[in-house]
Image (cartoon, rainbow, N blue to C red; front, side, top):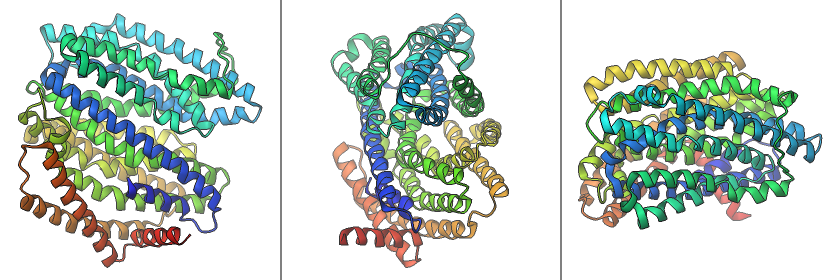
Length: 532
């Protein structure tokens, strides 16, 4: 958390001549997002841990399979809403707050209408959809999965409303509420699991998930009403702004949809392995996603508006500088983080999940998958930043095509790796395809906007690899000396905390020895702030 906070400070304040007040606003916003996201994700992990203890991986296979369809659909639509609503809302805001709120009301009605239609179609065609997405499920397990899917489908409409409210609040510089909407969701589910988990089983768990999802809307309502939102149940399909939003949505939805097909493919293949494999893959990816959300998404949420502003003002030199510095900072902080997760994957899964019905065997399988997923953490972060650069240039087509290339590569690699690595091969295919797609995206962007100070990025990468290698050696030998015996969650946590902290210290020392510019600037910034 501390490292990430200072990484954000470095990115925001690195440009000479930028007003400190603007930098402080960005840092404050970034800090709010980071802290709120961290709290929500920790509660989410606690929720997953309690869920795993109550039901185990085999019993949860049906639930995880059922949640795939509504989850992927709302991710596709939600990402598109977030990307398109904010700039259009701000444009409408110039005409007045009343006009902006009327636009949001119309958008709400439109997406409620669309998502309800999608939900009804999913229910009508539930049999072929669930069978296609889960080819390894048969008999009672398949029928149970269909029932759970029908229960969870309404979450699509609820999440559409959530994303619209989030976009509106973020446009009004309210980052805390959107970042904390998962708090009531997680608290309610955790409480339910402790009190009624075993009594009502997975069916009850699915129903409470639907209820908890809907309850997330309640804390947002007072804030959007305070802004001035007065909802009217009228849809103006002829609204020019709504038409523009729909046109902007298409490439974003297609690009996000292509990425989500990866999830369907991976989980579909996982259903063909032994019982519990799908849940092991799901839990491993959730831990991986935790680091993505905290150490990548939170940063890009703040940097994206800055790059967009620079591009709009035709300050391409400054925009490329911001992008280059962001890439360097990502490499310095995300690469060692991903390697720590890889090295400590088994104790991480043990601490988070191994209790109750989640056995040692499940820990071994899940941790091995997490190990390979973590290799793609840097590629995930880099691609996210580069895609943001394309969006500032109003080019949504290139990232969409790149997503399609990544999908094809991932599918090909899955069917190659799975014969050699089994379930782990699915995670490795994900990481490999992401690195290749990221490299293609960066190469294409360089041709589009010119040099991005690639020499500096390469030097930073080499120095980071050297420091990370030394760090890994220290962590490896400390783990052996500390003798990680998996008999106590507290002792394992303390031991990996010691070895990881020592590794980070060694990384920083090595970074100073090789004269890593980002770490040196970070030190100077910390000293400056202390002096102030």
